[in-house]
Amino acid sequence: MEETQIINPKSSRPGRFWYLILFVLIIAGLWWWLDGSSYTNSSSETYQAVFLDNNQVYFGKLANRNNEDYATLTDIFYLQVSQPLQPSQPSTTVNLVKLGVEMHGPADMMRINQEHILFIEDLKPDSQVIQAIAKYKEQQTAGN
Image 1 (cartoon, rainbow, N blue to C red):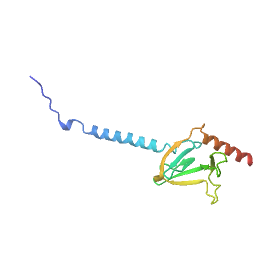
Image 2 (tube, one colour):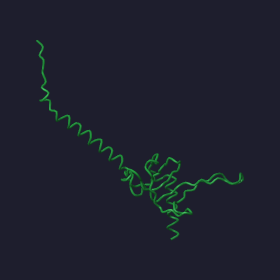
Image 3 (cartoon, rainbow, N blue to C red):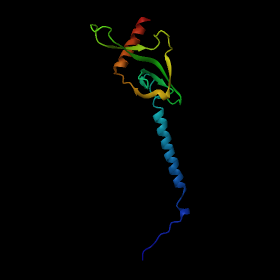
Image 4 (tube, rainbow, N blue to C red):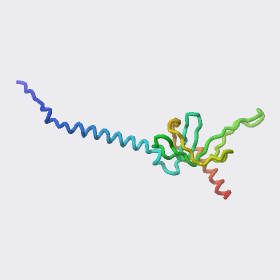
């Protein structure tokens, strides 16, 4: 004769379900916190490339990335492309420019609307941009 087992729903420990839900929420919260805070926990020496939806790219140190409205970029540089005026001149050149030398004299801090950031990349220490920034800073130090 086959034995049938009857499970009493009250004895199946409904608390386990809530522990499982709580565990999943804690894991999801930790993942979100670690992923979102990775930009603010970067070394203060780490530079990021911030790509905007208007095709501009700024290089600098990013903070307040977890702010809902604005991220803050400091120690800012950008690329400036120079086209030759006449065909006999050398080809196109690309220069790294420090923010603040423009005619309107902006401060070296930018608040960027989060909605306009497409993506952010950490720059490696051996990148050409980091090397150009280091060269710029050496020239500034030598000039003072």
